[in-house]
Length: 572
Image (cartoon, rainbow, N blue to C red):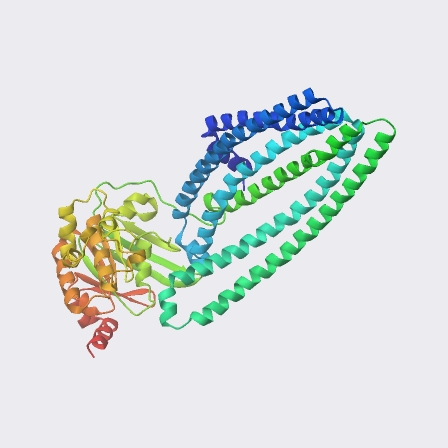
């Protein structure tokens, strides 16, 4: 990973907040002045108390009060600036990462699962922008500690040297701890991603889990995975506790050594009792100098981990992105051609060099046994996957030369289980056509036998359908998906078992509706029931990843044994 490049990119996110950052740092320096002034005033006040100087006692007490109130007021506005900067930067990072995730090849989601990417987009942008929040606190504390450190040196060089040596010891321990923590963080990220991916899969499949009575089995499996995380977390915390005990033991020894040194210095008249009391009160502030440096060091390490995990997605180094050409076809016609096209999943070849050509405005049926590559053809036309060999042409142009908009805006795919967004029926339709008029929407829904159902709902087209259209039956979801494809007005329509959940009467109606529009679109229909495609211009017969027939129903019945057997099996 080119860290310099990505540091610059992150810097640009913060650069956009330049005005807020300038205000923030001005306020931070005011805070540092207040925080550094407080122990000095406290020391003066203690001296006044020791000498029973009532006027000075009142003066310094009043100054401490004013500084304290000023500190709180400045802290309030300083924190507001910091939070605004954090939120704005996090939003920018999340927006970019979301865009980049949409550009990833589908095979990344096949192998890693959606939960893996959800975990990264939820955790890492906040971790990156959060580094600013943590570092700004550490930096303010660091500058304050430097002020106190200087005051200690000025009051007693002996204590200054003592604190310097102690700080170096604590810094050495902190570096050791940070290296250990860095390794732990990476391992925990792997655990969390694995668990998030598995758990999100369970939630998505909750209906099937219930009906298959898999609840207890999967809870047991999930509990086992969670137990692994808990055990690892326990071991990690146990090691943290060891560091904590060692750290505190050293600090108690430092306190003891500090008192011994104080006794020696006071006894030999190198230090007054009042000054020793002030130094003792603020020893932790001086020693925190190294704590603040250690925190900044640790946060930089944390920043690098989050940066690496995000830019594995953004730069495509680990998770490949889709590649498109730059040719745009303004007037798309809709012809499709496969030339010796091969494709496989994980070295399992599905398409073994298929050839066919579909002219614009033709309606083509695609048939064959399950697993022969019918849906794969649709995936390749949509460029969800890239061919392993051979070529695909849309409108006579190699698909790899076309830009994303030409491909995706001119193709609509309706699947057996379409995804319906958690919004109103109207908004689901307007997603694909923001300028959709109500008249056209109703017209397309009538073609799909959806309008009558919608008008019986209380809120009609403004009815919310729930997550993945939960309030709709399977058949209604398919009708809505077909209507969505029609209002998109794309030139190529791909129907992958798109009417399988419909009753025969509705299916016949929709097929008749498709016949009415077939001369204006290139339509490909995958069907297990051959009766739904016999009226197509041609039928593409796939067997064992190869094209074994491409003709009209009548000619295939006469001349193609594989198709004939499929058809006779359906009739029997």
